[in-house]
Length: 407
Image 1 (tube, one colour):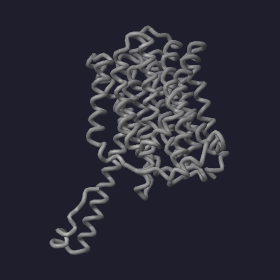
Image 2 (cartoon, helix red, strand yellow; image 1 turned 90 degrees about the vertical axis):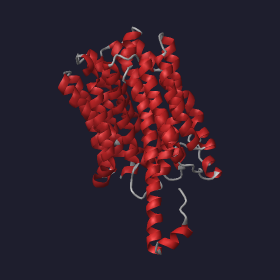
Image 3 (cartoon, rainbow, N blue to C red; image 1 turned 90 degrees about the horizontal axis):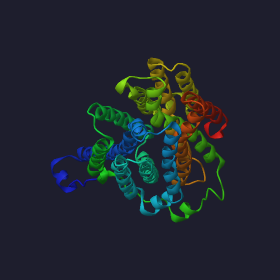
């Protein structure tokens, strides 16, 4: 926090006024820290949305079938898996601040690398690196979110994830603009990389440099030696949610292009409607939980996810599918912020370790779901694959109703 000249202020202001000045300065600084954290969440979501908005173009440019595309997309979760065993340890050792800054920079730098891909193996390598650095970025940025939340008395975690969703919407709009201007993926991705670099440049000073808890606490818990079943099931709930979310990112454009037969630039309509709804829902998440309780919100969210996916399968037309994707967006919007908050409050497990466990399990759903869709679509059809993922929403409702942590 910027220092104020106390001795000078005592000469020109009464003591009551001085306290108010310091109080306002502190609040202003805390709000700036919150904004910086939100923008790093935004940068992370914007990077992924930028890639997702051009997936149909890569499918066409590289002449990929549904199964081929699914195989290519599988390179991303493989990169994620390679980073998982040591990403949490590195964040703990070097601090979430350093890894947040470096992680977002390297994550977004993978975008131009993907833009250079003209062969399938080049795309696979680029996606592997995208997933690898994305894991570091995800763990570090969410840790920053927890630290920032601790500075405020009111719940704000939902707004951070709302920033991530808002970035997805912004990435879709930028993708639409790039398509309208006939810019190729390399040009598009380079512009997006520059935007993320500017976000880092103007906000890195306000990222919290906080020390982790004592070394004894950090090393006193091992999930593999003493697995916490509550954390495991929280991770499974997030897995189901983020598998549903992942197919919206990677397959909504393909679904609107090949199943809905949306004309021209309207292929991004489903993705855009999904992102608008998810962003809106996440900014409302804290209010809904306060009013109705976490358990009720999660159960309803699971039902809405399933209803939206099955509506898209049964009525594969422009307007019904747009509404269906909005329902899916609203359904998934509340799950991750609530689950992360619940994981952070599990007893006898340090917050950072709990978040790493749940985040790792849940992000597997986000990354494995899209390739799974490709394989199922190749064997049956894209509609049947969406119907399969629709079951996950029902799983969410059932699991939430049985977990003691939500009673």
